[in-house]
Image 1 (tube, helix red, strand yellow):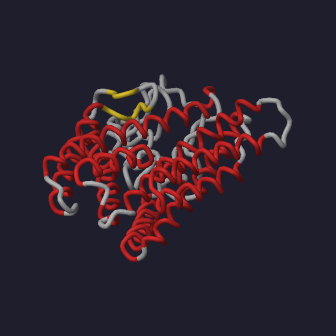
Image 2: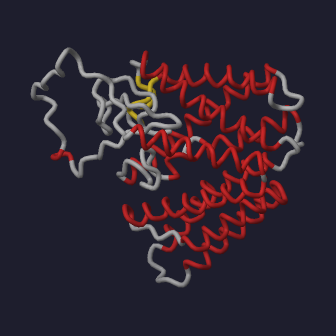
Image 3: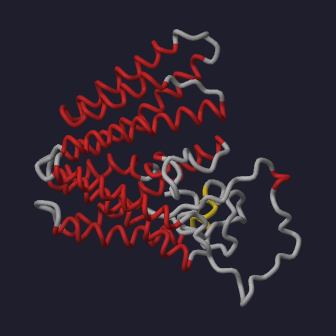
Amino acid sequence: MNDSSWGASPRAGSWGGEDEGATRMSGPLFRDDAPEPADHSARPDRSAPQPAAPGGPAKKSAGRNLRAAIGVGVGLGVVILASLFIVKAIFVGVVAAAVVVGLWELTSRLAERKGIRAPLIPLAVGGAAMVVAGYARGAEGAWVAMALTALAVLVWRMTEPPEDYLRDVTAGVFAAFYVPFLATFVVMMLAAHDGPWRVFVFLLLTVVSDTGAYAVGWRFGTHKLAPRISPGKTREGLVGAVAFAMAAGALSMEYLIDGGHWWQGLLLGLAVAASATLGDLGESMIKRDLGIKDMGKLLPGHGGIMDRLDSLLPTAPVVWLLLVAFVGSG
């Protein structure tokens, strides 16, 4: 998810500003790539009359290269599902690789935009170890690996001058928690006897929530949800996210999860819509603070890995906890 997921304003192509809501296709496959102007003086003069599009009002635009976005999205889906249902260990490797790339993107942007030197090497090694420990040893293994990673960050940063030491290690510990630690809950779901289906439901509900937000917000959205954080999101889009996720949750718990019931799926879908929305807004805050549009450019039509993980990471512990509460750890 991203800043333009739930937009409903007719002025497509803009990004910043409370009155510059976006209406681009987003969700699991589509993102806007209109660049943020380097400064306010570079923005177009919106007070001047704008020429009307031939044949009537301007149509809502997707903004990004949809062919590339669809191709990358389908390719990622094939890799994820194939590894998920064929060999669990391969999926653990996919998660670990995503974590390392996500950490690289996050630490690179922190260094470029804020001069924050969060040490990547201990974060990458510790992050990958955290994912493996979470799969092999559960929550206990994840916490131990998290603590050791934080300690490694503190020690590694000691090899450099002491200026801004506290700032850098704080950012490093935050990065360790935000990316690999939250990702461990995905592989902890996988460890159950029906683990692939649990992970599939987690991914499905997050994508459905995002899609519902876009579909309803694009068509009916008029009331901004959090204009200072993400001006494209609307309250109508949030309603769509909740409705779609609850419906998908009821079906998923009834037919895909052993021992699950439809009413549990309603609660699960509601929780997913809430956590996915908060996760999206949280990364939007980070990107606005850094003054960037995307965390990276690795995925054509999507941005970076972190731009795909924004709603997934905070949703993983929520889904893990509710599934354990509803049907046990497996």
